Image: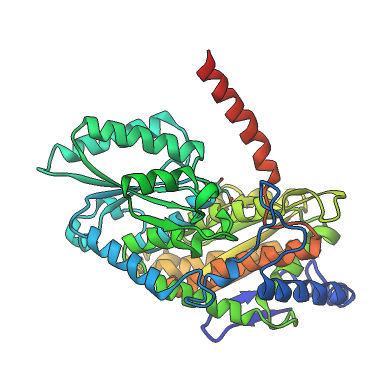
Length: 479
Ligand code: PA5
């Protein structure tokens, strides 16, 4: 039985995965030398920026630096000047820019989408401008090459622009490598089509800061056309980039508190300095997930927040887990085919879809819940039908209570059949606690990479299909 509560009120409740269910204290005790070793490796990485055998996709030595992003001004990844510039930039867009389209895919999309959904909710773009405090409508594109989605977006802008004297769209093209197919294709099409429709546009780039021979094409286009540029620093991979300008710019444009988000990440980083699993939530999380898979066959992780607006957090985590830990080779070059299959879910919705299988299917899953304490918006079910058996128990009950009781019921039902689950409990959904949680997840996979001895920071498997796709697209040009 174990639960780590931080001073902020954030709780990692692992009571249903450690102790009686799944991983035992004896197993953990036997494992303690590996835990100490993994912790020492993470501490060494924090000091030197180096992770064992890690190289970039081009085979060049590459540092791993995501854990420095929360420390504004410290060793220069996020600086006070850049944060102030980003906030001022977003402020200038207020009342001037009608809509922003963010083009990015994978790590250059998923993190920003979480910040948007958590802060703005589902109906932001339907709110009148005054309700958005003059902030622009926000759209995501380039996270697929789907012609229908892009055509619909175009149709939408033409219709919107027809109702205004001047309609202005800001393109934000996010690509660390600067040539990724989906966002670049999306941007090039949308810019050309909006120009053709006489809709005013402006472009912003978010890319690698490298210069000279390493300058990205996107960076060069930005320099030549004088577009504003934001950066994803060297040593920060896409799936860890939510704490860089890639994620933060999306937040800034909607009035999300970048500083609270980074404060939360920093608080979590500081809470993860001990080599004691009863104190360090990332070490505990990495160790439990690793042992649950290795010794108990829990090779699938279902990530299930109880909040609609956190569905994109599940999607972000799917990428983080899959790309970081799904590896054919370990760091000694041995074939291990390590990984845990991530599944995105949402409570209570997926209790009416996936839970049947979680409860009675193969004993190969660990369910990871996220639940919220206080909801800023709550509604109470009126007593309209309190005399009707079946609906009487709803009378006078806040919806937030239904959510928390449903999560508890789900965990209890799983526990009755010795099926493990854990819960991240956020006192409320705000920028600080979101920063804590997203940072905890990043550091947890870093720990698990150490425990499994795989490089959690590369993605060689993704490069293989990219080579095929680029070759077939090139072949189309020569026909
Ligand atoms: O995590 C990753 O590295 C990837 O998902 C990338 O973010 C994604 O492929 C997009 O790459 P880029 O930012 O270079 O366009």
